[in-house]
Structure formats: C-alpha cells, structure tokens
Amino acid sequence: MTRPDSSPSFRFLRLPVAMSACMVFAALSACSSSTPPLFLSDGRPTIQVQCPAEGDRDSCAQQARARCGGTYDTVGTSIEGANFNLVFACRAK
Image (cartoon, rainbow, N blue to C red; front, side, top):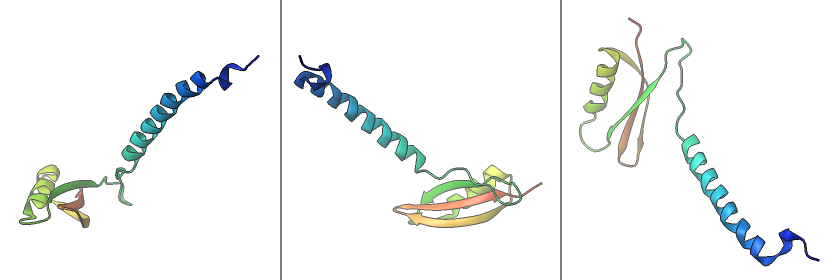
C-alpha cells in the first residue's frame, strides 16, 4: 500500500501550489520594499514626489508647494535612474 502523498501524480499537484505561493510571496515582497510613510520628530508626515532627473527639477518643488499650500521643508533628495525624488514635509500653518 502506498501513501497518497508519495504517488508521482500527487507530487506534480504540489508543484503548481508551491510555484503560486512563491509568486504571491514575491509580489508581497515587492510591495513591502517601497518606502513606508515616514514622520518627522514633530509628527508631520513626509511626502515623496518624483520628477525627471534630467532637465527642470522645479516641477518637484511645484508639486510640493501645491500639496502644502505654499510652504514646505525639504527632508531629502535622491536620484534613482531617470527620476529625481524630493521628500518633504508641509510646514505647520
């Protein structure tokens, strides 16, 4: 008598399940690699905007001003590939 889990057909059934689990894990890992919302020590949330690294980076500043109603504090900047990233926090009104 053979155990059900030792049959060749059962092993092949487990392969798609294992592959699906790996794909779901990879997808969730990709989601978790994004930058989580950060807060400054005074409790203000930070926001990240992107604009092209080549050319006028003022579009990032314009996005920040628009989101903050005019004034913001720059927390950090970086270049990743073709993108310029601006991380900022709106000033308290």
